Length: 472
Image (cartoon, rainbow, N blue to C red):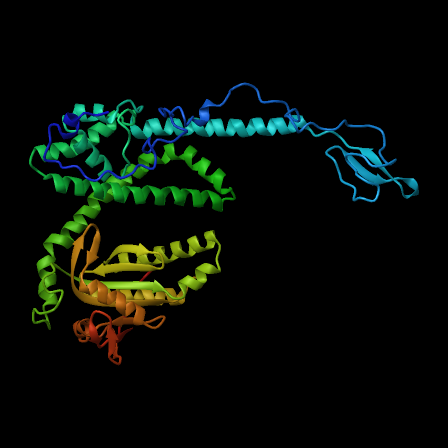
């Protein structure tokens, strides 16, 4: 067990967080990977006896009858029972009618134990090959064997166990026991990088943990997405799900480096784009959003001006009940892919997808309106997807943790629920911002009472002159 000094050591100001109950004492260690040390009462799957398996049919209680023997039509027997009882087929004897209508036993060939054993051996070899592939892949991904306990890692970093554990948790990994050798030198180097930023005064502790958590959460979703996409690809080629997952393990070594290169490129490119959106153009957006306002609005104190939109599929719940798992997954994926493409073409940002709904934003009301119209039209034209309800609201938001918050977001969500299938609804403030633009037609609707906002005056947004957003 770790001592109090080790927990509170060199960085006492990193207060501990509540320790969650670990679902797995070995953290993210798998039973198929090298380095697992099972406890005495929980043996590993590799601790089974390694001697030869008993020959087919030799296990107690499963012995087979002789391949041939005397006919049994002269009265009851253990196999056939009384003469008037239904006849039963044994493993190697079949009752067949004899000449004259009586029944007799016809010898049947013994099971081909050679073929059965060969298939079992082939399955064992398949599992063994897959296990070896996983072990080799882990060494490559982790940069070496798991050779360090968390005490070893904290000691090398010169921090308390609490501090090291905080960053490990922030990456999204569960706690491990003090005695588990769960860490590699690569783990230590990565956590040490964030600690160094704190020691140099570039980041404070809270910010370092927040940035680390952003990396952990985004990469966790990314790798799950990638693995499932690869599995789906193999299934579409005719493989079963288990076979597809084994094949993904085999092919990953060939695509890890290319994916890493694209990820590093995308990170820098996305960072540049976000820098423009969240710093350079902020003041211009706030000035534009001030038109028609008096400063008393609920969202007035928020720092970013955005057109916020929602799009959701009509009748998704009832449709999902009629579909099998794969068909439902394909429909959701098709919906998200279409939305992501349209939002990107329109210069917006897909904030998140929640089942049958997407949340997006754009920097101007005009861009948001173009995206909203294109989404509604694309869903109406798609032969597979149901129509959608769409809303767009121009206002101010707070951006945190990769998401957006505030009354503008809430109002857009409420309007989506009010929209008819295939239509786009906007509020009065957004309609005023768009009314002078001949690319849009606004049709006022009767006032509606909206929870949390009171009476609002929505308008249906329709395309005006021009071609609108051109989607390939």
